[in-house]
Image (cartoon, rainbow, N blue to C red; front, side):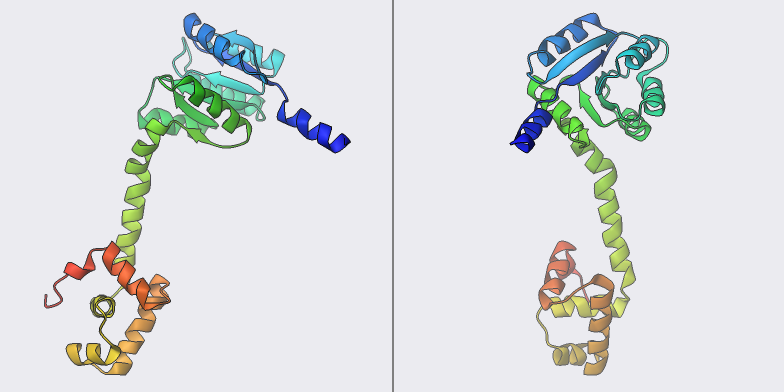
Length: 232
C-alpha cells in the first residue's frame, strides 16, 4: 500500500518553473497557461540574464523556460551559467529563432529542449513533460530542417561509402544476383569460374552484412542499381 502511495506522489510532484523572457506580456501568457496545470507552478519571472540567475539561485526551480533574446547577455550565456552552477535544472528554450546556428548553440550548451514561440499551448505543455521525463525535445517544425541538413546527407554519404567498398566486379555481380541469375549463369556471362563468383558473393555479403539473396535485391532497389548499364 505504501509503495502505491509513493508512486502517486512521484507522478503528481509539482514542477517549479522559472520563466525568462524580456517581454512581460509573453511571461504573463505563459504563467496563465502553466498555472492551470495541476502539477506545474511558475515560481518566478525574469526579464534579463542577471535577474534570472539571481532567482534561479534563490528558488532553485526544476525547470527554466528560456528565451534566447535578452537584454545585455543573450540566453546562451545564461544557459551556460545555469549548466555550470545548477546542472540538475532542466532548461527548455522557447524562442522565435528557427535557424540552425541558434539550435546548434543551444543544444551544445546543454539545453534539454528547443521549441518555437509559435508552438501551440498543448505542444508546450507536452514539451515540458517530456523534458522533465529526461527526454530531448525539438520543435516539430525544426525536425525536418535538422534532418535535411545533417541526418539525410550523412545517410547518403554512408550509402556512397558502402558502394565504394565494392570493386567494379563485385558491383557487377551484386546486380546480376539481384536480377535473379544463378552463380553458373553469372560465371558464363562475365567469363570467370563459378568459384570466383562464389568468392565475390562472399566478400559482398561480408562488406554489406548481407545474409540472403533478398538482401541483394533490396540493396539494388534502394540504390537504383537495376538501371545500371553493365556494359559500361
